[in-house]
Length: 173
Image (tube, rainbow, N blue to C red; front, side):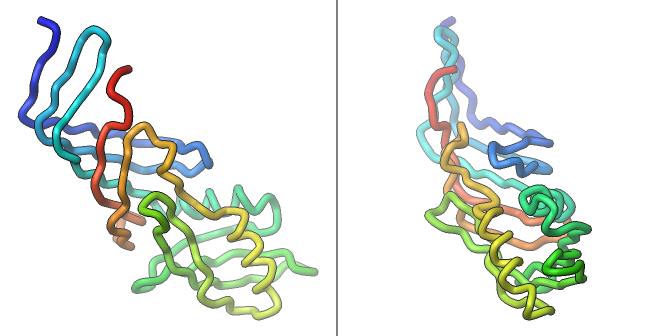
């Protein structure tokens, strides 16, 4: 036997660290009919499947803080309706507590950006924007082994939920 066929297949993974340093809480890929070849090992399918990726708010906060390299600390991320509220201690001339309101934006169906909406302390706007520019895009799926098209971003209880269509990028392993 050189191959098998499945009516449907799914893959679930957790704790995936992306090349930019952001860690996904979970990633689920669901495909319809799938053919698995054994020599060489490869996968093929006729129709795109669906994916869902979840980034917890704590992991997003840790990622933003790691990208800021000392300019901000004590970062927390909380959903507020359609925006994210990010609270942090920022170092402008001296340390100040700042609350930032941001929106998430998908660009080219592959990249997730955090866009600044408002800053509680106007003097900190420049440093906050500069740090967001360093962190963006917070997610870039263009180099993933699975070809995804991000079609929806939702601020859910468990974190930022990305979903859309997906297909295997390569045919063999």
